[in-house]
Length: 141
Image 1 (cartoon, helix red, strand yellow):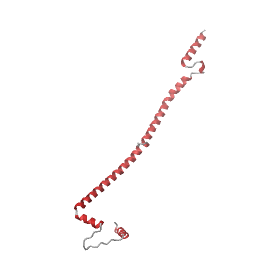
Image 2: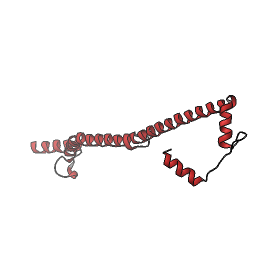
Image 3: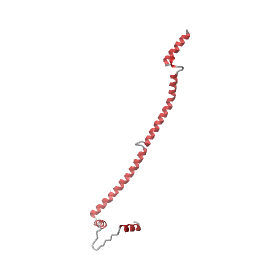
Image 4: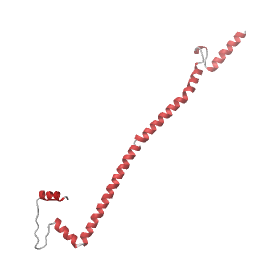
């Protein structure tokens, strides 16, 4: 009789853990649980490191990453220089216009250079384009 009691207790304990008579030898779910608990932390660490690397790569090479930011910054500096140059040219042209409005010598200079006007008694000689370029090169201008 004691053997029958022990056998009933084993079968009842096996039913509670899910290891009944039809599930095979040994406590497989307990081993699976132990393995899962042992592997969970290293696997989680690998996943976390992988995500950190992916985020780091995206921060450098992504659509709004450091590479694009540096290109935009260089383009911004170039455009700022162009704006500064254009503002200087605009100021120079504005000053030239003001001189043409008020200074008779500036008006005379423009008339002589651009329109080839001459004072009475003056003769204007125009040289062919090739000669003027050769002379400018010879004088170092």
